[in-house]
Length: 393
Image (cartoon, rainbow, N blue to C red):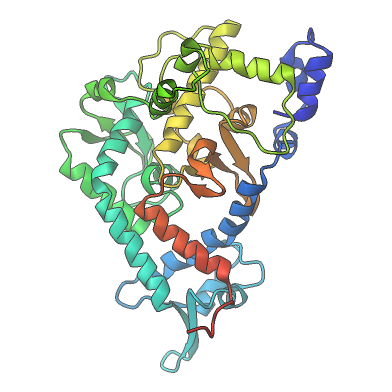
């Protein structure tokens, strides 16, 4: 939360909070957040990784001849945010890209190095091996939907298109990855599990509804946060009250963020407040203050569960926002992240807003890595390496 807003609340406890918040624009709220140097440093590296992956996907789009002309990349420089041009960017990463001249076509081309191809194949194998998990994660996503149209639904465009809604859907198990492989994987997953999923036409152009055939699956799911609560309760040195732990979330704050006594008291009160879980049926929303706070906590629980389903426990805010309607979230997603800095961290590096699940990271790395994440980290290592180590054996 904004530091000066917290100070204002302490000095003026009888002043309504909403009156204070309305004076602050969303952009000001974002810029005034407490920075976490660990996540900021990680996102500083990811800025170039996102561009590298975009170029890599263009190269691998043609399996028979995996290369792309420099002229073609130069025309896409603005779209790919290559500020100094395609050639300058490619030369920064010789461990990943190789520029060569094709005498037959009389123009320079770019291809991946052997090391980059090896990492790409490793990631593709990891994605294919994780397909059984995709079924479970799709079921969980659909089970969190609050749609009342007989079955639970999530909207996304047809499989032959590539838009933001589909990127959000594929992001549940491989966010920030190109769509070529994943689109085919999702199509095969739905086809092989016709008893679980069904595609329906939506009354909008180029849009389908992914439907959960049997809504009873949601009764068997337990939110990921429950595992942490169980472990905390089983600890011998657990000093937290059982009632408070029942509805609590793990919190961790940026090292530069000052936590006042009043702020800690409000967080403790929020932790013990009951709420409806992400897989539970929600009743009629109450417009009272307590009802609005319970709705906000349910929204936090849904986003927490959503991030837990992703490979890297991080996703762009824009992708997350596409699910607002289907998850029944009426709040501003970006402000929700900023209001709970102990659970989420919002980074604005690289001209994009990225949200992290704090508890999943330690010193900039996932606490529980997976094969897809490991392949991405190898690619990130080569990005950070830049031009160093070129002549080492």
